[in-house]
Length: 513
Ligand code: SAH
Image (cartoon, rainbow, N blue to C red; front, top):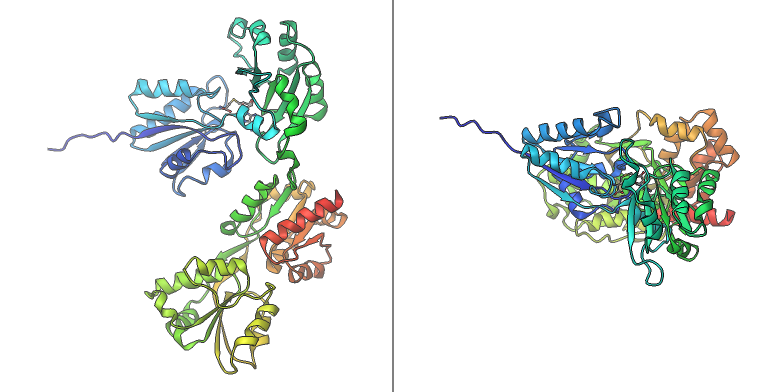
């Protein structure tokens, strides 16, 4: 007999932290990795959604309901409906779900509907703002308590819910959320209730992000100072003697690339490491993939070479991509690592070498400088005349390596992956470039340089020519490609690595200092 069975899903009410992609908890990431549906708040940064599997549905809750007052109902309904279909739902909220996040109301709605749930805390905005602005929330000398306060009372709530005299007397730090729109009224209420006008205060916008902005002032001057600086929501206002520590403890805003908008032009799969490093240095990375990595048009030459790998003396790689693509194909053909036999391995640079090490292979040769010319010279020094070399590379790349080796040894070249210019460049990023709102463009290969620069319009190019938007290149070869287009290079890496590009950027900014 068929038993009717309703699958029961599960809802995780999860805090995403204040914005910095590293300030999400491991538990939150675990929940996201198993999610079928992610219902996220507008303030949740896109990077957090990348933790969910590609097939998971992602919905911003502002799409569910347009107006603020009616917001909750549709969100509750969407969670409950999906859970009843057996889905694993992650309700992802900025900061902590239970601090001004209506997480409590959502949990009650789930309980009433009989849906099992869990609540995963997050770093709330006040904690993020305090840490990244250099303001200790408590202090043995001056702050024995912290109060989280909303500056935005619901219109229908009686005024009495916030006891201003009590807050003015509060023996510690006040952390005011949602206070920017009513900053004048909030400050006036505190001062009228007896708080000293001279109390140190700070407003921190976009806390923990490269776009963070902080304004410090005496309490009575804060509204005017915030207005003058053009500060806006989302911001946390911190009030108390601890706010004065900032003059010595501010660290985030002093990072070498703080607040710089830096364009990352690498293929999407490879942008991650550079993006992470830029965030670590305080920058605002903007990703605009300009080339794409694809399968080669024809595997036949690669397969033929792989089937007789043992016939070659050397296998040389000019990119980490090449390493990954060649081995993926080797496994796909049913071989294992023994197919390499006694072949010797060459890598053009440290990243390519690391890609080999990921397969427990130690390269026999990495040149001192990371260009084709240097790899060729290093190979010529060790290869016996007449030995056979296999070059695994992209379908379009420089011919120089083969040319420099030909005549000395037998060179065969196979394209293990293809590079193509990205079909479309994201319009919103191009608009940012047009407005000159990008400080620097990183160019990590000559192909990338050409793929991007030949497709920019005159407005974008004029910003580059005037130096408002700077170009930073990975090597002299990439610089030459820029130069051929008649554009100026502001910074060139001294070692041809991603870290070299980052260092060149730092030096350039310091130099301008
Ligand atoms: N649940 C969230 C708060 C949501 S209410 C939390 O725990 O952080 C929205 C308010 O949070 C904003 O008005 C602002 O006061 C604050 N906020 C959220 N993210 C912020 C950020 N990155 N920087 C400063 N304030 C932020």
